[in-house]
Image (cartoon, rainbow, N blue to C red; front, top):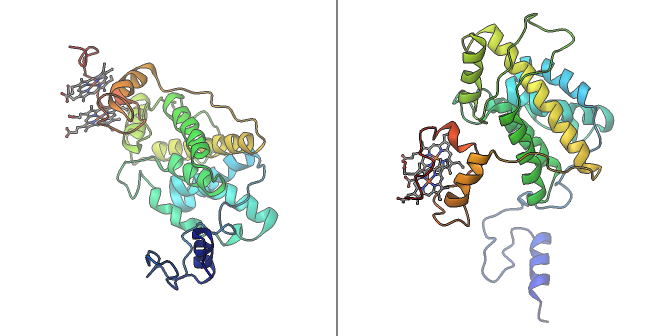
Length: 261
Ligand code: HEC
Ligand code: HEC
């Protein structure tokens, strides 16, 4: 009997780890399906209440910081409704994102947790990217936080700022400059709590729209970034950079005509 390639590949799924491919490419992989098993991914999403999400996120911040706060509310609501597998998700792992990953000031934990959440439910890579783009552009371009909790832990007016960056370092420090507060203070924590709540809420709004087939991308890169990318990114003449962050948030002093001379 001769097997087609498809049949051989199918057999690998059943006799996982048994090295059924002639190339033995799977040898040493054990029985781990690498997340490609249909049953385990993606997880099912059902419409969630954005306001409940924000309230829970604000509360959860105290349990595990920003990334945890952005991720846990959706999982906890789905666990309340359906139990498993949501109930067993080890949401504590999301604590790593605090302060831009273990305090490194890199990717803001609120958007990191939100992108992780989207990735749990949205399988198609191009769709996932669209949703993440929308959230990240919103985060970069919007005066935040606007969210005011019903029972604030700290009853003060929180200044709003535009981060122009998804980096924790830039986002927090821009806010410090606008508000006059230092980082590692109660007002800064309150700002990040509200920001996490608002980001979690926005994420659920995007996911609700996506799964109701009414999502359409509303935001674009700012003009400068579009310009820069036209010469420097994938498919362009130089193709020597990657990324979608606002270029001028770091390259603020580059001459407008630098590439043209
Ligand atoms: C978070 C800060 C940051 C952001 C945002 C950023 N860059 Fe950079 N970029 C850097 C740093 C730092 C270097 C310097 C690397 C070096 O030369 O050591 C660099 C280098 C470069 C270079 C130089 C490559 C070379 O050949 O010397 C180009 C071109 C560039 N960036 C384009 C972009 C574009 C286009 C964007 C927007 C899509 C962008 N950058 C966004 C920080 C940033
Ligand atoms: C019209 C095409 C074009 C556009 C638009 C453009 N660049 Fe460039 N850029 C170039 C060329 C060409 C070079 C020189 C490349 C080399 O020498 O390897 C360059 C070099 C650079 C460098 C490294 C050298 C330096 O001067 O520091 C950085 C950083 C850079 N560009 C960032 C940017 C950013 C940020 C933007 C948007 C504000 C941008 N570029 C827009 C074409 C362009």
